[in-house]
Image (cartoon, rainbow, N blue to C red; front, side):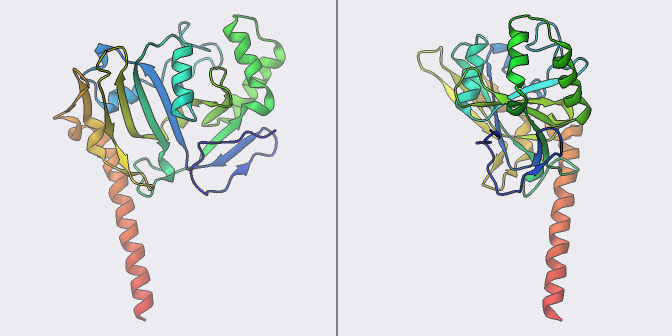
Length: 265
């Protein structure tokens, strides 16, 4: 049965691959939840988000799955993301990232604006491979060949069933797919404290995901307060994203002027 993508938020069509269960589409929300520790205070949203892309090391989950690759793990909802974090030992102090595929935004910040290529791992029983890895079992030749087939297609991410929350879906992002993600909000909740302090940083608003680039320079400070970097707007990341925003704005103005000129004739 084909995967039901509950976090597919828009109306973009879904294009399917001829052989592997791979689709190309956009307009998604993704969530990632990690345990918050005090050493994350003072890190900007940009730095925190960059930390979501992990080197493949022996102490990482599924480290041997795609050797030589940087990977990032996301979920289809906040509940699934929280369940996954708790499965891997997180306490109640949680940092949650709400991301979206940048190319589907009315004002993108990453160029070129491309849709996501997603492999539906539920149709190829990918969870069986993951369970073997969790149990430290050896993979078969067929398992390895399937992993290679996936890698050869260079998808942005691979969707698979969540073992931590029934009905939930996880997404394993490769580095090039991870670069297509932008942040909408980051939530901090200190659930281990009696006061359960909480706060959030907003990096995009409205149904069109209008970006607020300077917010990537915001940070959490003790206890769950928000601070701002004085240097982020001087960074290469900020200027590169701003170039894409300005380019899109100029194109929109040009298209509007063309329509106006055609109407006046």
